[in-house]
Amino acid sequence: MTVAAPPIKADRPTDEELTARVHSLGEIIRANGPQGESDRRIPEATIQALSQQGLFRLGTPRRYGGYETSVKTMLDVSSAIAEYDGATAWVSTLINVTTWGAALFGSAAREEVFGDNPDAKVSGVGSSPLAEIKQAEGGLRVSGRWYYNSGGLHSDWVLLGMVRTDDNGTMVGHNSVLIPRNEVDIEETWFVAGMRGTGSNCVVADNVFVPEHRVANTLDFVEGHFINEHADEEPFYRSAWQPVLALVLVGPQLGMAREAFRLVASQAEKRAISMTFYEKERDSVGFQLQIARAKMMIESAHLHAYRAAADIDRAAAANEYPDNLLRSRIRADCGWAVEHVRDAIQLLIDANGAGSFAESNPLQRIWRDCNVGGHHALMNYAINYEIYGKQLLGVETPIVPTI
Image (cartoon, rainbow, N blue to C red):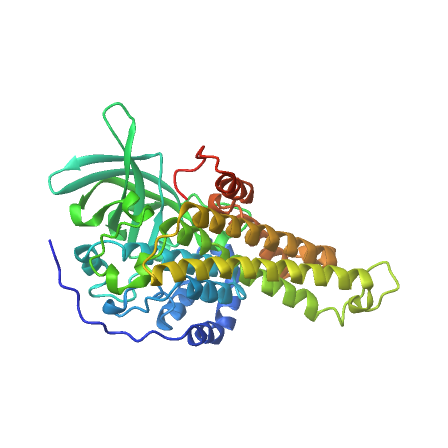
């Protein structure tokens, strides 16, 4: 079934305008953060505020009223949100990038998702070993469990990936499917040390019918074969699949690192160093060295993240698909950025002292959120460096399904 897309409706705000919108909501996001952690979900007041400012339209096509932005913009917006709350940044990032993923489908699926709702929110999980596909007339029957679905409590649709096997259980492919959120269940399984507010629970599907136009071969996305009929005029939806999915996860880390630095540096004029003669932290050479080193780590993370974003956006604009070497280097950039953010936040906490761990101190939540988010599988820096090292040395042994 072919559906003619409507004319372009939306102007694209500048990156500066979008981040200004975030900062206008900053105190709302910050004030609601503790409730989100307690409730294990982002408060609806925060979700509504972000939605009213169009901050869930980053991945939505302009022809459907969205902003159709860029990977660089996603980093800007998610890191700005993370200055106020890491969990809110994580949820908004995952919804925006999965909404971008839904826009890679053909026009019939796009029309269903976005046709009547430019603020449609899509959440998802890339794959699950606990999923089963059965052929059905006109589509598939899907059952299974998908851990962990960040943003699922606030989404209108879910994008779920699953392995396709033959009668012997051998993998023969991989599919991604779009399903209305009200056709699946959410099971509460998200009980964690950090990023509690993300509500990254389990999606459960029981024999859900998915029509053919909402089924995609994931390898088409991975290899740059576009099923979106408008890809020739929509560069954002030519962006490299796996690099995009990895890099956007760095955005919340960057914002949390900036906020941790701000908190520690802003108090240095007022705080003494316990059990020393220093009445002000700022007067200590040791403290000065820690602050300088942490700042350099954070800036290094930003440089690598934005280099990767520029490479992805540049290739998409030129209608070029990045080769394995560049894609693997982007994975290494992601690992480098997250490793240095984690180390910088730890160093800032070391400099700030034991008071960092008071429940009333926002530093301890940043520390917990950074570490939980930074341990996402795509952020495993040892694996990401190995992927890049193999490419640099011409070692062809694969260790991950896709780069």
